[in-house]
Image 1 (cartoon, rainbow, N blue to C red):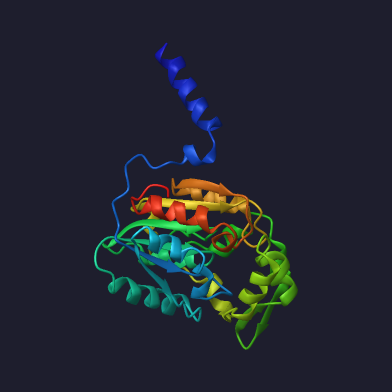
Image 2: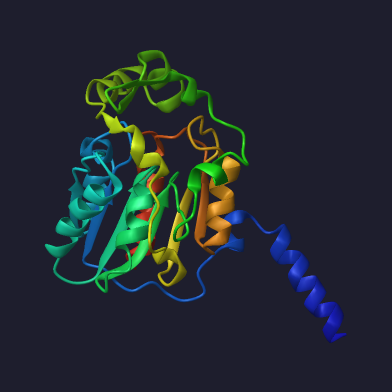
Length: 256
């Protein structure tokens, strides 16, 4: 009977929705601060829809202006922002920014990591090679490189990178698109903080930039508490309430 009961429990877990299957087993530490790290082809304003929700909940919020010039310089920018925080802090990243928080998140101040449609490399992992195991998103055809820096063409940005965002907002985000060094995508971390820190992940089901199945693989690998959003890559813009709720959960505030 015990064997059958064990098998039934295991089967029920496999059949459970992704949010439950990867849920954290312990309550998150109550955090005072949230540090937000944007990804490639964006700047700190990409968090503008999420920030007011977090502030209304009583959290101190800092959005890093990620230079996107190299992995080391992006890590340093986030470390500087983290050094200014007083007390427990949740690190949050979108897209390529997940590489940064995977490195920086080992800091003792960091109580949790939140990945929004983000990379989550293991230490010294060739993430480019890992990504090639999944279908390539159509946004890639719109990458334009000049003098070692990349941007997305208008068509690729509006159609694929910002799919699900209102046309007006997508054009605004395109206007502030930040040039991204081509070299950063092959950069490797020396740490993977998600091995030791509780993690949360928001999968974008309609993502044309980072394959949703790659996102699911990363979330499962880190045993993250996971939600799936009916959104494109910029869920932090198109689904700010759901993204903020996940961050609040990681900060020990539950859902608003």
